[in-house]
Amino acid sequence: MRQRDDMTFPFEEYERRLHELRQRMSDRLLDAVVISDPENLMYLTDYQTTGYSFFQALVVPLEDEPFMITRSMEESNVHARTWVELTRPYPDTGDAIQSLVHGLREFGLDKKDVGYERNSYFFPAYHQDYIHTAFTEGRLLDCFGIVEEGRICKSAVEIDIMKKAARATEAGMRAGIDACAAGVTENDIAAEISAAMFRAGGEAPAVMPYVTSGPRSMIGHATWEGRTVQPGEHVFLEIGGCYRRYHTAMMRTVVLDELSTSMFKAQERMKLALAEVKSAIRPGLTVSDADNIVRNIITDNEVGANLITRSGYSIGIAFPPSWDEGYIVSLKQGNSAIMREGMTFHIIPWMWGVDGDKTVGISDSIHVTANGCESFFSLDENFVAKPDQAADSGGAIPLNSNHNEVA
Image 1: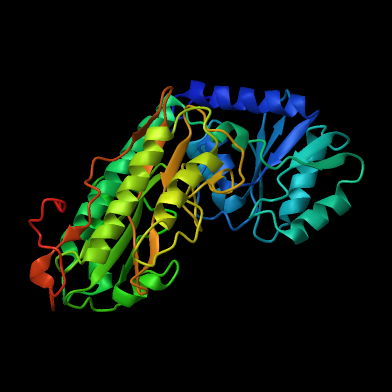
Image 2 (image 1 turned 45 degrees about the horizontal axis):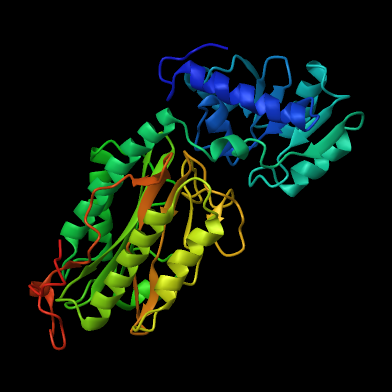
Protein backbone atom coordinates (compact mmCIF):
# COMPACT_ATOMS: atom_id res chain seq x y z
CA MET A 1 0.00 0.00 0.00
CA ARG A 2 1.32 3.41 -0.92
CA GLN A 3 0.20 7.00 -1.50
CA ARG A 4 -0.42 8.17 -5.08
CA ASP A 5 0.13 11.79 -6.08
CA ASP A 6 -3.46 12.50 -7.16
CA MET A 7 -5.47 10.71 -4.48
CA THR A 8 -8.47 12.62 -3.13
CA PHE A 9 -7.54 12.18 0.53
CA PRO A 10 -4.43 11.68 2.63
CA PHE A 11 -3.28 8.07 2.71
CA GLU A 12 -4.19 7.85 6.42
CA GLU A 13 -7.86 8.32 5.52
CA TYR A 14 -7.84 5.17 3.40
CA GLU A 15 -5.92 3.26 6.08
CA ARG A 16 -8.61 4.20 8.59
CA ARG A 17 -11.40 3.10 6.25
CA LEU A 18 -9.74 -0.23 5.54
CA HIS A 19 -9.03 -0.83 9.22
CA GLU A 20 -12.66 -0.15 10.17
CA LEU A 21 -13.91 -2.38 7.35
CA ARG A 22 -11.76 -5.23 8.67
CA GLN A 23 -13.16 -4.71 12.16
CA ARG A 24 -16.66 -5.18 10.75
CA MET A 25 -15.48 -8.23 8.78
CA SER A 26 -14.13 -9.74 11.99
CA ASP A 27 -17.43 -9.04 13.75
CA ARG A 28 -19.23 -10.91 10.96
CA LEU A 29 -16.73 -13.81 11.00
CA LEU A 30 -15.68 -13.18 7.39
CA ASP A 31 -12.25 -14.14 6.09
CA ALA A 32 -12.53 -11.85 3.06
CA VAL A 33 -15.00 -9.63 1.21
CA VAL A 34 -15.56 -9.02 -2.51
CA ILE A 35 -16.54 -5.38 -3.00
CA SER A 36 -18.05 -4.58 -6.41
CA ASP A 37 -20.19 -1.48 -5.85
CA PRO A 38 -18.53 1.51 -7.65
CA GLU A 39 -19.18 3.90 -4.76
CA ASN A 40 -17.67 1.48 -2.27
CA LEU A 41 -14.61 0.92 -4.44
CA MET A 42 -14.14 4.68 -4.59
CA TYR A 43 -14.58 5.01 -0.83
CA LEU A 44 -12.01 2.33 -0.01
CA THR A 45 -9.36 2.99 -2.67
CA ASP A 46 -10.12 6.19 -4.67
CA TYR A 47 -10.68 4.01 -7.73
CA GLN A 48 -13.04 5.39 -10.34
CA THR A 49 -13.82 4.80 -13.99
CA THR A 50 -16.80 5.26 -16.27
CA GLY A 51 -16.28 1.64 -17.30
CA TYR A 52 -17.99 0.13 -14.27
CA SER A 53 -20.54 -1.71 -16.39
CA PHE A 54 -17.77 -4.30 -16.77
CA PHE A 55 -17.29 -6.40 -13.67
CA GLN A 56 -14.71 -5.09 -11.23
CA ALA A 57 -14.06 -5.93 -7.60
CA LEU A 58 -11.73 -5.30 -4.70
CA VAL A 59 -11.01 -8.42 -2.67
CA VAL A 60 -10.12 -7.55 0.92
CA PRO A 61 -8.74 -10.41 3.02
CA LEU A 62 -8.97 -10.04 6.78
CA GLU A 63 -5.18 -9.80 7.09
CA ASP A 64 -3.38 -10.02 3.75
CA GLU A 65 -2.97 -7.47 0.96
CA PRO A 66 -6.14 -6.53 -1.00
CA PHE A 67 -6.21 -7.10 -4.75
CA MET A 68 -8.31 -5.85 -7.66
CA ILE A 69 -10.10 -7.77 -10.38
CA THR A 70 -10.60 -5.45 -13.38
CA ARG A 71 -11.04 -5.43 -17.09
CA SER A 72 -7.56 -4.96 -18.63
CA MET A 73 -8.64 -1.60 -20.03
CA GLU A 74 -9.32 -0.32 -16.51
CA GLU A 75 -6.17 -1.60 -14.81
CA SER A 76 -4.42 1.74 -15.43
CA ASN A 77 -6.97 3.40 -13.14
CA VAL A 78 -5.85 1.17 -10.29
CA HIS A 79 -2.19 2.09 -10.71
CA ALA A 80 -2.75 5.79 -11.43
CA ARG A 81 -5.43 6.57 -8.84
CA THR A 82 -5.29 4.14 -5.92
CA TRP A 83 -3.04 2.70 -3.24
CA VAL A 84 -3.76 -0.85 -4.46
CA GLU A 85 -0.69 -2.64 -5.89
CA LEU A 86 -2.02 -6.14 -6.65
CA THR A 87 -4.21 -6.47 -9.75
CA ARG A 88 -5.55 -9.43 -11.68
CA PRO A 89 -6.93 -8.01 -14.95
CA TYR A 90 -8.96 -9.99 -17.47
CA PRO A 91 -9.09 -9.36 -21.25
CA ASP A 92 -12.27 -8.59 -23.15
CA THR A 93 -12.11 -12.16 -24.44
CA GLY A 94 -11.77 -13.48 -20.89
CA ASP A 95 -14.19 -14.29 -18.10
CA ALA A 96 -14.46 -11.86 -15.19
CA ILE A 97 -15.91 -14.29 -12.65
CA GLN A 98 -13.47 -16.99 -13.58
CA SER A 99 -10.70 -14.44 -12.95
CA LEU A 100 -12.24 -13.66 -9.55
CA VAL A 101 -12.44 -17.33 -8.59
CA HIS A 102 -8.84 -17.91 -9.73
CA GLY A 103 -7.75 -14.89 -7.66
CA LEU A 104 -9.49 -16.22 -4.57
CA ARG A 105 -7.77 -19.56 -5.09
CA GLU A 106 -4.35 -17.96 -5.74
CA PHE A 107 -4.48 -16.02 -2.46
CA GLY A 108 -5.70 -18.97 -0.39
CA LEU A 109 -9.30 -17.81 0.03
CA ASP A 110 -11.05 -20.61 -1.86
CA LYS A 111 -11.87 -22.57 1.31
CA LYS A 112 -12.79 -19.53 3.42
CA ASP A 113 -15.94 -17.62 4.37
CA VAL A 114 -16.15 -14.85 1.78
CA GLY A 115 -18.64 -12.01 1.82
CA TYR A 116 -20.04 -10.43 -1.34
CA GLU A 117 -22.45 -7.57 -2.07
CA ARG A 118 -25.57 -9.40 -3.17
CA ASN A 119 -27.43 -6.14 -3.77
CA SER A 120 -24.75 -4.46 -5.89
CA TYR A 121 -26.11 -3.03 -9.17
CA PHE A 122 -23.02 -4.24 -10.97
CA PHE A 123 -22.83 -7.81 -9.70
CA PRO A 124 -25.73 -9.16 -11.78
CA ALA A 125 -27.64 -12.33 -11.10
CA TYR A 126 -25.95 -14.38 -13.80
CA HIS A 127 -22.52 -13.50 -12.36
CA GLN A 128 -23.72 -14.43 -8.88
CA ASP A 129 -25.09 -17.73 -10.17
CA TYR A 130 -21.74 -18.45 -11.78
CA ILE A 131 -19.65 -17.75 -8.70
CA HIS A 132 -21.93 -19.88 -6.53
CA THR A 133 -21.40 -22.72 -8.98
CA ALA A 134 -17.61 -22.24 -9.20
CA PHE A 135 -16.82 -21.42 -5.55
CA THR A 136 -17.54 -24.86 -4.15
CA GLU A 137 -15.12 -25.40 -1.27
CA GLY A 138 -15.65 -22.18 0.66
CA ARG A 139 -18.79 -20.32 1.71
CA LEU A 140 -20.25 -17.23 0.02
CA LEU A 141 -22.18 -14.97 2.40
CA ASP A 142 -24.09 -11.78 1.70
CA CYS A 143 -22.26 -8.83 3.28
CA PHE A 144 -24.26 -6.05 1.65
CA GLY A 145 -23.90 -2.84 3.67
CA ILE A 146 -20.58 -3.66 5.26
CA VAL A 147 -18.83 -0.73 3.52
CA GLU A 148 -21.84 1.58 3.74
CA GLU A 149 -21.65 1.36 7.53
CA GLY A 150 -18.46 3.39 7.21
CA ARG A 151 -19.65 5.65 4.41
CA ILE A 152 -22.75 6.96 6.18
CA CYS A 153 -20.83 9.31 8.51
CA LYS A 154 -18.44 11.58 6.64
CA SER A 155 -15.07 12.53 8.07
CA ALA A 156 -13.84 16.11 8.26
CA VAL A 157 -11.89 15.74 5.02
CA GLU A 158 -14.98 14.37 3.27
CA ILE A 159 -17.02 17.36 4.44
CA ASP A 160 -14.35 19.63 2.96
CA ILE A 161 -14.62 17.84 -0.39
CA MET A 162 -18.41 18.17 -0.31
CA LYS A 163 -18.00 21.92 0.25
CA LYS A 164 -16.12 22.02 -3.07
CA ALA A 165 -18.99 20.14 -4.70
CA ALA A 166 -21.36 22.70 -3.15
CA ARG A 167 -19.51 25.56 -4.83
CA ALA A 168 -20.17 23.89 -8.18
CA THR A 169 -23.82 23.32 -7.26
CA GLU A 170 -24.34 26.97 -6.32
CA ALA A 171 -22.52 28.25 -9.40
CA GLY A 172 -24.73 26.11 -11.61
CA MET A 173 -27.90 27.21 -9.85
CA ARG A 174 -27.05 30.91 -10.10
CA ALA A 175 -26.37 30.51 -13.81
CA GLY A 176 -29.59 28.56 -14.30
CA ILE A 177 -31.65 31.20 -12.50
CA ASP A 178 -30.07 33.95 -14.57
CA ALA A 179 -30.77 32.04 -17.78
CA CYS A 180 -34.49 31.59 -17.13
CA ALA A 181 -36.48 33.82 -19.45
CA ALA A 182 -39.42 33.64 -21.79
CA GLY A 183 -38.32 32.53 -25.24
CA VAL A 184 -35.27 30.48 -24.20
CA THR A 185 -35.33 26.71 -24.34
CA GLU A 186 -34.87 24.35 -21.44
CA ASN A 187 -31.70 23.24 -23.27
CA ASP A 188 -30.36 26.81 -23.12
CA ILE A 189 -30.87 26.86 -19.35
CA ALA A 190 -29.27 23.44 -18.90
CA ALA A 191 -26.27 24.51 -20.97
CA GLU A 192 -25.66 27.54 -18.75
CA ILE A 193 -26.00 25.43 -15.60
CA SER A 194 -23.55 22.82 -16.84
CA ALA A 195 -20.96 25.30 -18.05
CA ALA A 196 -21.04 27.20 -14.75
CA MET A 197 -20.70 24.00 -12.69
CA PHE A 198 -17.69 22.85 -14.63
CA ARG A 199 -16.01 26.27 -14.65
CA ALA A 200 -16.42 26.35 -10.86
CA GLY A 201 -14.36 23.18 -10.57
CA GLY A 202 -17.22 20.72 -10.74
CA GLU A 203 -16.80 17.35 -12.43
CA ALA A 204 -19.21 15.11 -14.32
CA PRO A 205 -22.17 14.57 -11.96
CA ALA A 206 -23.95 11.28 -11.48
CA VAL A 207 -27.10 12.92 -12.86
CA MET A 208 -27.22 15.98 -15.10
CA PRO A 209 -29.43 18.88 -13.94
CA TYR A 210 -33.21 18.69 -13.92
CA VAL A 211 -34.74 21.57 -15.88
CA THR A 212 -38.49 21.63 -16.50
CA SER A 213 -40.84 24.49 -17.28
CA GLY A 214 -44.56 25.05 -17.00
CA PRO A 215 -46.69 21.89 -17.21
CA ARG A 216 -43.64 19.66 -17.81
CA SER A 217 -42.69 20.18 -14.15
CA MET A 218 -45.41 17.66 -13.27
CA ILE A 219 -43.51 14.83 -14.99
CA GLY A 220 -41.43 12.92 -12.45
CA HIS A 221 -37.66 13.08 -13.07
CA ALA A 222 -38.12 14.82 -16.42
CA THR A 223 -35.45 17.20 -17.62
CA TRP A 224 -34.77 19.41 -20.63
CA GLU A 225 -36.22 18.37 -23.97
CA GLY A 226 -35.94 21.51 -26.06
CA ARG A 227 -39.20 23.08 -24.91
CA THR A 228 -39.39 26.87 -25.20
CA VAL A 229 -40.25 28.59 -21.91
CA GLN A 230 -43.38 30.71 -22.22
CA PRO A 231 -44.10 34.13 -20.64
CA GLY A 232 -45.56 33.89 -17.15
CA GLU A 233 -44.49 30.27 -16.58
CA HIS A 234 -42.30 28.87 -13.83
CA VAL A 235 -39.11 26.86 -14.16
CA PHE A 236 -38.19 24.08 -11.73
CA LEU A 237 -34.45 23.47 -11.27
CA GLU A 238 -32.66 20.70 -9.39
CA ILE A 239 -28.88 20.51 -9.58
CA GLY A 240 -26.32 18.10 -8.17
CA GLY A 241 -22.77 19.43 -8.26
CA CYS A 242 -19.90 16.95 -8.08
CA TYR A 243 -16.27 17.00 -7.00
CA ARG A 244 -14.23 13.78 -6.82
CA ARG A 245 -17.51 11.83 -7.04
CA TYR A 246 -18.91 13.57 -3.92
CA HIS A 247 -22.19 15.42 -4.52
CA THR A 248 -24.40 18.09 -3.03
CA ALA A 249 -27.80 19.00 -4.46
CA MET A 250 -30.40 21.74 -4.33
CA MET A 251 -33.79 22.69 -5.80
CA ARG A 252 -34.91 26.20 -6.66
CA THR A 253 -37.87 27.71 -8.51
CA VAL A 254 -38.01 30.65 -10.92
CA VAL A 255 -41.31 32.38 -11.70
CA LEU A 256 -41.53 34.52 -14.84
CA ASP A 257 -44.07 36.77 -13.20
CA GLU A 258 -44.86 38.23 -9.85
CA LEU A 259 -45.71 35.49 -7.37
CA SER A 260 -49.32 34.41 -7.35
CA THR A 261 -50.93 33.86 -3.98
CA SER A 262 -50.58 30.10 -4.45
CA MET A 263 -46.92 30.28 -5.39
CA PHE A 264 -46.14 32.55 -2.45
CA LYS A 265 -47.89 30.15 -0.06
CA ALA A 266 -45.97 27.22 -1.54
CA GLN A 267 -42.70 29.08 -1.09
CA GLU A 268 -43.45 29.83 2.55
CA ARG A 269 -44.48 26.24 3.33
CA MET A 270 -41.22 24.88 1.98
CA LYS A 271 -39.10 27.51 3.70
CA LEU A 272 -40.88 26.76 6.98
CA ALA A 273 -40.34 23.02 6.56
CA LEU A 274 -36.64 23.54 5.92
CA ALA A 275 -36.26 25.90 8.87
CA GLU A 276 -38.10 23.59 11.27
CA VAL A 277 -36.33 20.39 10.30
CA LYS A 278 -32.90 22.03 10.29
CA SER A 279 -33.64 23.43 13.74
CA ALA A 280 -34.50 19.91 14.96
CA ILE A 281 -31.70 17.93 13.32
CA ARG A 282 -29.01 16.81 15.74
CA PRO A 283 -27.36 13.52 16.69
CA GLY A 284 -29.99 11.18 18.12
CA LEU A 285 -33.00 12.40 16.10
CA THR A 286 -34.58 9.56 14.12
CA VAL A 287 -34.89 10.00 10.39
CA SER A 288 -38.59 9.17 10.75
CA ASP A 289 -39.04 12.12 13.12
CA ALA A 290 -37.23 14.37 10.65
CA ASP A 291 -39.49 13.16 7.87
CA ASN A 292 -42.59 13.81 9.98
CA ILE A 293 -41.56 17.42 10.58
CA VAL A 294 -41.24 18.07 6.86
CA ARG A 295 -44.24 15.98 5.84
CA ASN A 296 -46.64 17.51 8.34
CA ILE A 297 -45.76 21.06 7.28
CA ILE A 298 -45.93 20.37 3.55
CA THR A 299 -49.17 18.39 3.85
CA ASP A 300 -50.84 21.30 5.69
CA ASN A 301 -51.10 23.55 2.65
CA GLU A 302 -53.83 25.52 0.90
CA VAL A 303 -52.59 25.12 -2.66
CA GLY A 304 -53.49 21.51 -3.46
CA ALA A 305 -49.93 20.17 -3.38
CA ASN A 306 -48.47 16.96 -1.98
CA LEU A 307 -45.12 15.60 -0.84
CA ILE A 308 -45.25 12.31 -2.74
CA THR A 309 -41.74 11.08 -1.97
CA ARG A 310 -39.40 10.66 0.97
CA SER A 311 -38.43 14.05 2.41
CA GLY A 312 -34.69 13.59 2.14
CA TYR A 313 -31.84 11.16 1.68
CA SER A 314 -28.18 10.66 2.43
CA ILE A 315 -25.90 12.19 -0.16
CA GLY A 316 -22.18 11.76 -0.83
CA ILE A 317 -20.26 9.48 -3.21
CA ALA A 318 -22.21 8.67 -6.36
CA PHE A 319 -21.89 7.31 -9.86
CA PRO A 320 -24.68 7.19 -12.46
CA PRO A 321 -27.53 6.36 -12.38
CA SER A 322 -28.20 8.34 -9.19
CA TRP A 323 -26.52 11.10 -7.15
CA ASP A 324 -27.90 9.99 -3.79
CA GLU A 325 -27.12 7.47 -1.06
CA GLY A 326 -30.78 6.96 -0.26
CA TYR A 327 -30.43 3.20 -0.33
CA ILE A 328 -28.25 3.58 2.78
CA VAL A 329 -30.66 5.85 4.63
CA SER A 330 -33.61 8.02 3.60
CA LEU A 331 -35.89 10.34 5.53
CA LYS A 332 -39.15 8.43 5.42
CA GLN A 333 -41.86 7.26 7.74
CA GLY A 334 -41.13 4.26 9.92
CA ASN A 335 -37.34 4.43 9.62
CA SER A 336 -35.91 4.30 13.15
CA ALA A 337 -32.29 5.00 12.11
CA ILE A 338 -30.81 7.83 14.13
CA MET A 339 -28.82 10.77 12.88
CA ARG A 340 -25.17 10.91 13.83
CA GLU A 341 -22.49 13.53 13.53
CA GLY A 342 -21.03 13.56 10.03
CA MET A 343 -24.15 12.34 8.24
CA THR A 344 -25.03 14.36 5.15
CA PHE A 345 -28.53 14.76 3.73
CA HIS A 346 -30.34 16.39 0.85
CA ILE A 347 -33.56 17.68 2.45
CA ILE A 348 -36.35 17.95 -0.16
CA PRO A 349 -39.62 19.52 1.05
CA TRP A 350 -40.80 19.99 -2.53
CA MET A 351 -44.45 20.38 -3.54
CA TRP A 352 -46.09 18.37 -6.28
CA GLY A 353 -49.20 19.85 -7.89
CA VAL A 354 -49.51 23.48 -6.78
CA ASP A 355 -52.84 24.62 -8.28
CA GLY A 356 -52.98 21.11 -9.76
CA ASP A 357 -50.44 21.75 -12.50
CA LYS A 358 -47.11 22.96 -11.05
CA THR A 359 -44.27 21.24 -9.27
CA VAL A 360 -42.00 23.57 -7.31
CA GLY A 361 -39.07 23.03 -4.98
CA ILE A 362 -36.70 24.53 -2.46
CA SER A 363 -34.16 22.14 -0.95
CA ASP A 364 -30.92 22.07 1.00
CA SER A 365 -27.93 19.80 1.53
CA ILE A 366 -26.73 19.70 5.14
CA HIS A 367 -24.25 17.91 7.36
CA VAL A 368 -25.03 16.89 10.92
CA THR A 369 -22.75 18.50 13.51
CA ALA A 370 -22.14 17.67 17.17
CA ASN A 371 -25.05 19.89 18.24
CA GLY A 372 -27.18 20.48 15.16
CA CYS A 373 -26.60 20.82 11.44
CA GLU A 374 -25.07 23.18 8.89
CA SER A 375 -25.99 23.88 5.28
CA PHE A 376 -23.44 23.53 2.50
CA PHE A 377 -25.03 26.52 0.74
CA SER A 378 -25.53 30.26 1.09
CA LEU A 379 -27.92 30.85 -1.83
CA ASP A 380 -31.23 32.52 -0.97
CA GLU A 381 -34.15 30.10 -0.70
CA ASN A 382 -36.94 32.35 -2.03
CA PHE A 383 -38.47 31.79 -5.42
CA VAL A 384 -36.89 34.12 -7.96
CA ALA A 385 -39.60 36.27 -9.53
CA LYS A 386 -39.09 37.95 -12.90
CA PRO A 387 -42.24 40.06 -13.40
CA ASP A 388 -40.98 41.52 -16.68
CA GLN A 389 -41.43 38.02 -18.14
CA ALA A 390 -45.15 37.88 -17.30
CA ALA A 391 -47.90 37.31 -19.81
CA ASP A 392 -50.60 38.34 -17.35
CA SER A 393 -50.03 39.44 -13.76
CA GLY A 394 -53.65 39.24 -12.68
CA GLY A 395 -54.08 38.07 -9.08
CA ALA A 396 -50.38 38.34 -8.25
CA ILE A 397 -48.83 39.53 -5.04
CA PRO A 398 -46.86 42.74 -5.77
CA LEU A 399 -43.13 42.18 -5.91
CA ASN A 400 -42.49 44.82 -3.26
CA SER A 401 -44.90 43.27 -0.77
CA ASN A 402 -43.52 43.14 2.77
CA HIS A 403 -43.71 39.33 2.86
CA ASN A 404 -42.16 38.69 -0.53
CA GLU A 405 -38.51 39.71 -0.63
CA VAL A 406 -37.41 37.89 -3.72
CA ALA A 407 -33.77 37.31 -4.50
